[in-house]
Amino acid sequence: MVVRNGRAASLWAVGVVATLISALTPAAAFAASEDAATRDPLRQYEQQKLGWQRCDPGSPATFQCATLKVPLDYGDPGGRTIGLAISRIKAGSAKERHGALLINPGGPGGAGLDMPQSVGSLLPAEVQRQYDLIGFDPRGIGQSSPLGCGLTDDELNWEHPYAERTFASNVAWARTVADKCQAKEGDTLPFITTRNTARDLDVIRAVLGEKTISYLGYSYGTYLGAVYTQMFPQRADRVVLDSSVDPTKVWRGTFQGWAKEAEAAFTRWTEWAAERDATYRLGATPAEVRTTFWDLVAQANQTPIPTEGAPLSGDDLRLGYDALFHVETVTPWIAALKAAAAGGKPAPATPTQQTPHPGPPAFTRGVPADNAGVAAWAIFCGDTGSWPRDPEQYRRDAIRDKARYPLYGDAGSNIQPCAFWKAAGSEPTTVVNNDHSVLILQNRWDPQTPLAMAQGMRRALHGARLVTVAGGEGHGVLGVTKSCADASATAYLTTGRLPAKDLTCSN
Image (cartoon, rainbow, N blue to C red):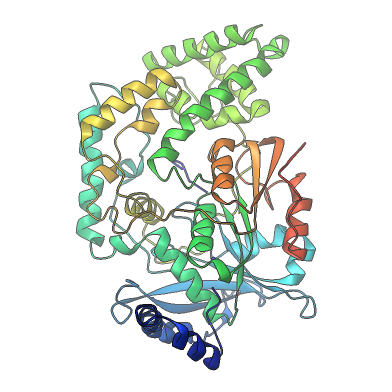
């Protein structure tokens, strides 16, 4: 997922290759030979033998881990290498086994070594019988040669409201993060990209001895999966993208996309709360509930509201817009904040979230404390060179979007370290535009990857089907909450059959 605060057959018979090359024009034959020569240096990686062993003394013997080597720079396969940590739980039935299912938890920056346990165990039994469940820590993350820049907790906090008086300090923060990472990891950062991670997936496929791989990716993992289908189309088997990023919006457009959907969720919440005014006393009409909320924001910016955790400012309240996607839990919390602001007892520090994202990382030994954040910036900034370089552009955009989208517009458009990232745009952004058969799953009310983003992914993947859970709240569908989308996912993963058309179903 995007964390806020958070796939041409490769082996041809020798005779077929010789026949084909002899029929090519000289220029085409040279290109084919050149391509084969380019692939040769990767054979040393693709023919590695894995030393599987129990992941941890306390883990089940069936949960196995191994490490393989990949080139840091695929343009220089003979150069520096890095280690990738992978894991597996074998298919429950050798007779029914279909292949390997790689699972990515999102992020970017999310460690996935634990996925066969933490998410795999939640998948339908039919899926567990048919697939080796494969987890992996992507390059630069977790146990896979982890990055670290020595960033403090304050430097890891990237959600900044815009104000004239604080913008200079926001710019200084963004420059500091970029400079510290350049100093610590400058030789590595240019190669921590989604494209290179997709190349790693294909090395994993080869090392596992699979002609094709299937894939389940959550949130950011949907972009990684889509890029794999673009780069290695004939090596991708069954691909499930859960809670999707719009590949045409990476990455600044993703940040900015949160703001628009926040306003839609806010409107839905005001309607829900108004219908229950007798219980929560936040207003009898949506307009009254809206007024209550913004009055509370203004008051909290003057005097932060006492909670059982840290005091809550108005900016904290509005930038925490994702709580509004869970109407049943956010409403009593806001009522408690209102009471606390009026002199009552401190409110709970946060509302109870109903649909947590799958899988906190279980393997943290030797991983820098700032690893997830640093890896996220490496990908956000390194995948594309489209981030503005002029701080004043961010200022103008933040002012504009704060007016358009009062909850989150300014934070979504405010300056980020990518403005100063020296490794930005080391390759062109991959354009996802193909006909691969993919299943896209999406909750209607998802704060991290809103429905509009999943619809963007659907437009990019012309052979896909989109299943939307109409009343679904929160981030993550398959294996996260029981929903109407599970049947479509189970049928696709076990038979390869997609729904005949896009579907919307009730939760």
